[in-house]
Amino acid sequence: MSERKQVDNFTLDCYRNCPKMYYWRIKRQLIKVGERRTPIDFGVAVHLGLETFYKEGMTQTAKDNAFTKALEYFTPLESEGDKKRTAANLVSILDKYFSRYANEPFEVIATEVGGAFELNDEWIYTSRLDLLVEWKAPKGMYIVDHKTTYDIGSLIAKPHNQVTGYIVTLHEMYDNVLGAMINGIGVYESDTVQDKNAPKVVSEKTGKLIYATKEREIFNRIPTQRTVRECEEWKREVVFLLKQIDHCEEVGVWPKHSPDHCVKFKGRCGYLDLCNTDEETCERMIDGGVYIQDPWKAYHETGDVET
Ligand code: SF4
Image (cartoon, rainbow, N blue to C red; front, side, top):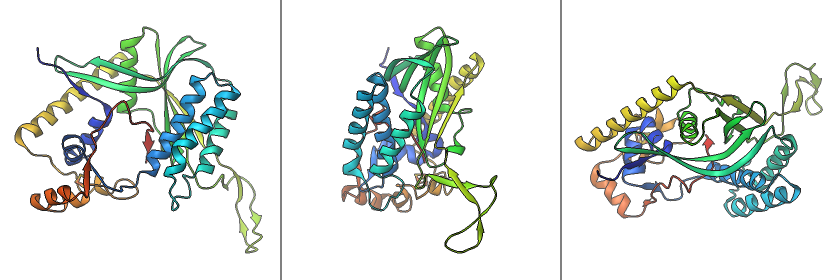
């Protein structure tokens, strides 16, 4: 039997977003030089802090080490133009998190766990689980997935392909699976927000009536479950997508999902220049170093970021 191929959620998401993006990122392994990645780096730093906090037993020493590791990673990457993702805000977010979740309703089993299972004779699905825990009451296994986001209210846990993949993976590892929990962490420039339920106050600056402010909620934990039927449906969908990817490969056609995904996130898709030009010019841009090869490494990249 030939060796099985591996796939993970990021790879599938590239294709779900735009087959051409899959072509550039996964097949050609390209990223644009100097592409802005502060949101990802900030997410990685938060992940490192939380990983240290939980791995080292949630003690004061664990917190101190968490600040150190997160700052060591992020400080050299801090970008002057980004007012939200600063080293000071990183410390503030971690500090608030450690206070809010000082007493967890679970026991930590492991952090940064690699998981894999056979989808079929051809494919293995792999994932990296942020935090594996055993809930105290009722007893059972949960996956906690840290997500940094600039819009905490927009997080959903279902439908969610990545989360379903985690739960299916967890079922392969344990019998008593309860589900997954999105551990949402909001990243904002300001600590306060308008309080539309409170009486208006007079602005010191303008003398006009304005809304009072209150402290902004930056955490949102969303527990979620999947039935056996939902897990089976997800597997069928993944296999279906893999067949589509194989078909694109066979015929050498990678459709562009333009323009929707090209400008979906705040900013533009990094492959816009390549998608806007003919094949020869594309290759010249690649040879000229505008894009470089950076193979996607499923287990090494952290910092799930909802951008
Ligand atoms: S620029 Fe648009 S069409 Fe091209 S890869 Fe990105 S999303 Fe797809």
